[in-house]
Length: 175
Image 1: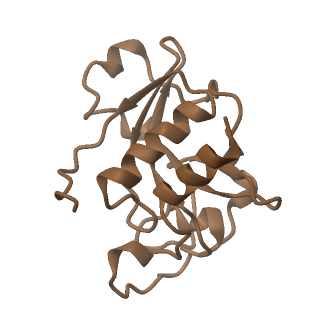
Image 2: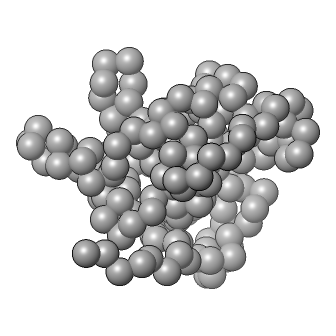
């Protein structure tokens, strides 16, 4: 892919934002939400087949909107130290005892409350080599059809051959 395509993709993903930046509301980050869990995330930027430990089974793929919570991953698109786009994932059930209201990791634990481009949830099915993706991150999630389409393109761009949109958001009409 050309650098021009990558630049366009980055533009369509949206500007890097701080947590809750797209919601246009001030929301207080609670204890534990900025803790550093970046070393527990896995970079899945170049393989398109993560072979994740908590893979869902084929029979669990039948309803793409009712996938098992216990095998959910959080994903985040941001930039690495060399300013290259990357995709990071972590099992959502990763404990974070400092988050008293919900003692598991959240998207801002990837960045220590720094900037990211997009975030959401996903499930991997090894048997079908398929990833199910949604934009459900209150901190970094897509807010437009254009951003969400760019997210799905990004997953394909980095090598995922079967990307299933499990988003149930009804997007507002864009100008």
